[in-house]
Length: 408
Ligand SMILES: [Zn+2]
Image 1 (cartoon, protein in one colour):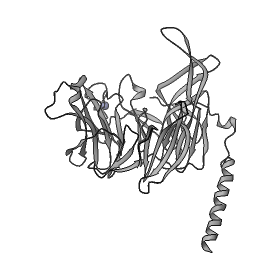
Image 2 (cartoon, helix red, strand yellow):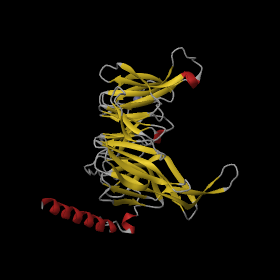
Image 3 (cartoon, protein in one colour):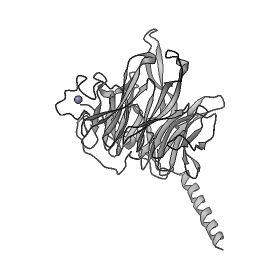
Image 4 (cartoon, protein in one colour):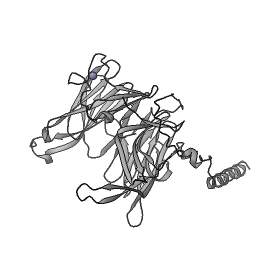
């Protein structure tokens, strides 16, 4: 009897879900409302807290920089000085991230002088940086942490060029190329990929052994990897006790992110002719291994603690042209973004359109709270002109739909 009632309720629920999915669950904004184009040029700023954060999310990699505790760290908009800048999301102001009050940030005396585009992570005011010195096989990347609160620079590990740094609660990890025993210093083939673990507490370092898979990120007591065969797995902190999450596949794995016990990953979609038409976004619970499809045909996505933000994929001519410098030929600009940003919950439900503008496209999103940082791709259809501003970072206020460039 009980089972029957339950079945009835379940089927009713499924039916109502099916019905609702035929009509938009949340009313979309009207075309006029959603066309945000309103660039805030007044400089007026009022902070809005939408209760969301990027804290606790692993794997939100954006070429723009990193976010932590209401700050954005970036080196991009000051490319000429190469300094690390810090944008305060609550005040809407940007300053050098160097905490020395008398430093002029224009020489090697400044701990953040000329660190290039290499901010590895930011966590509770501490940022990870890597400065590369020398050339070729002999070059070294000197990984350090810098405390933006007490101005302390701490050397962590010297690695080869092309190495990577990852951060978890108690450890740093480095994917590093090391010369094998008895190997020739000048022979590229004699270098092997290794994974090194450095304990934060005392900087004790251990070589976990050869590792030819790619580290996605490390979180608490796990290290997450993906392989050239598109397999996803994790191990413990000793790189042992491997657990497979996604078996090998011909579908390429893109971006991976983690929040709690849920791993999100994008995978490429191709038609019968092998033509790419965006990515799926999938979620797998790392305990139950329950895998679900969240969305399809995406260009990019960003995970926050409450939401998934994503942009649909398209392959459209914009009506704008690039002029080839050599041939002076007019080349049509094709864009893979629709100019729309959608937001949904962690299950793909409650989908709403939060931004739509096909004159100013926002790409490579980095999100903290109510603010989306992005590169802008501006199409001037009337004059057939296209501008990609990747050295100026735009900030979009999700709540009031205004955007501006963050500048000193
Ligand atoms: Zn300085």
